[in-house]
Image (cartoon, rainbow, N blue to C red; front, side):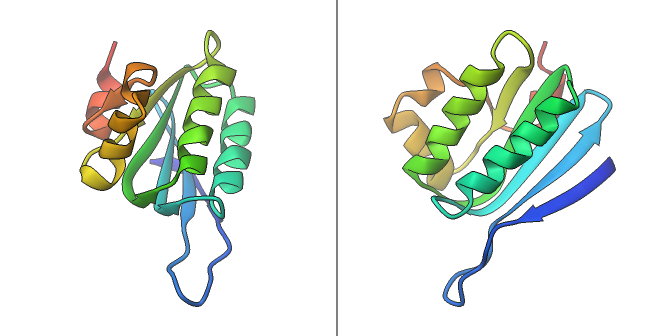
Length: 126
């Protein structure tokens, strides 16, 4: 992958820092989110999405496979990204496992967001 840059959330001493890495790939841009996607990391996700959108990719993938906790503020950022970029940039989300997928299912965001099980699937989906 090329064009890798990292924007870190502010860590606390009690919990590991979350991070968002922006990767440019031939299909578009992948934002790899790790750690707790909560109120502390959500603004970093927003800034990184805005940065990615300025690059005008055809596709933006939010890869949540390394997310350890998905809070309502994180889900709000996913919805905001989807709605803000709709019609301009395809937005896909990679989410697996109970910690991330279950909150999306319970809130029925799986009906609104394009959810994929793997990064490869999200990049290849037509």
